[in-house]
Length: 165
Image (tube, rainbow, N blue to C red; front, top):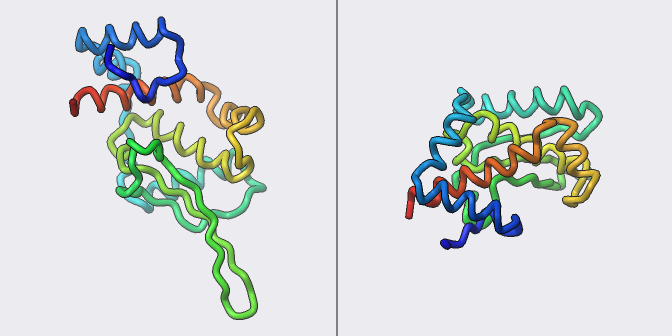
């Protein structure tokens, strides 16, 4: 069985089922049947508006975002699908803090649900730094099917990986 790096930690019966779908050439079809909806968020400006709308709906009291962009330098292979950073700059006698979210460009062509999942994940980091219960509770508040989307995103990345190989 080929190593399924995006699915490490899942039980053997799940990995066996995924491996069978890959061998039969059906993983892409299963995902396409489930997630046939693409999105039209192509530019950084559109992405910023999309993220701001989600933030306004679920996290009104959180800190403002300075920048939201697609980032071609984020490497899926290094498990960085999105990042959130806080940048502090001295301006005169003040310290200015700006928060940025960067989303890997693989999401520009991914199904709409996967873009939402990664945006929800990065927005949750505005309130919760660690991946703990309260973090995942916030993620499921913003996207009730968050855990299923995360698993299916891992399947999607596995599918992309298998197509490259």
